[in-house]
Length: 282
Image (tube, rainbow, N blue to C red; front, side, top):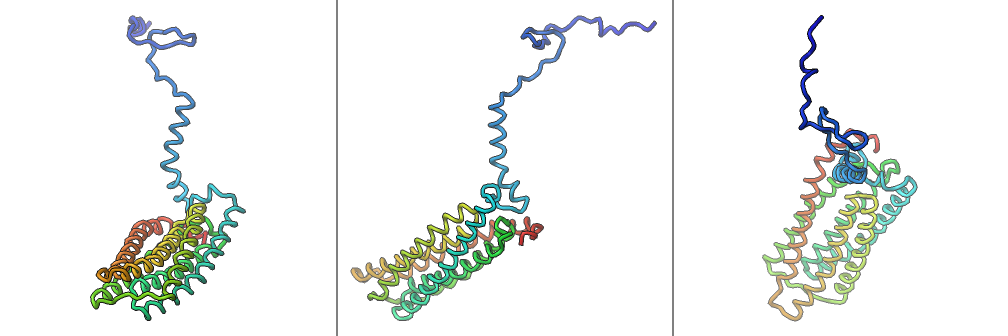
């Protein structure tokens, strides 16, 4: 007969204990970690999901709106986005013509800046139209990011033109003039562009669309520039020593647009590459 294993006959280590089924401790078994409560497990799952949810949805080539909106809701908001874009194109096109007229007649750098921004608004709204022209691509991340990249390029080019024109006007000391036509264009553009911006921001948030939010930002800039024309003209009217305010505002607006366009390209170009395999949504 083989000798018995001495380990089987060795005394148990009293320092190693294990709770039994009835709450008593049983010697000789390794200790186990206490189980987490369902509440703690649910909290940990929510914490992990909150940080990775957007990435998981994006990796599937979809926007986060695909999990928030029902199909009929998404199509309803898509149609609203198209309607707002058409309205924006019509309104800003009329304002652009009026602002360019004021810029030529009154040598206003702010008017020129607003006119250029109005043209930019027309282009950005046209890009949003393309973005939502395909009903099947309402949640397409690739289409969304492509639209944002195009917007970023347009922002940079437009901002460059605005800044160059404003610097030129400052260098030759162009003085702003005020009349009833300038007053009407400024008030109208400020109000209409601000209203369009509010609607675009709302739709962009619901559809989780960076393109719509960018279009809304551009409309907001147009509204600010419309009011800034009035402010700079009125300030010059009461104090001619601040003739440079008009051109300075134009430069500031141009730099803001340029910064936003650069940030848009930095954020969106890598995402376009990541989602290029999901062009089926096009």
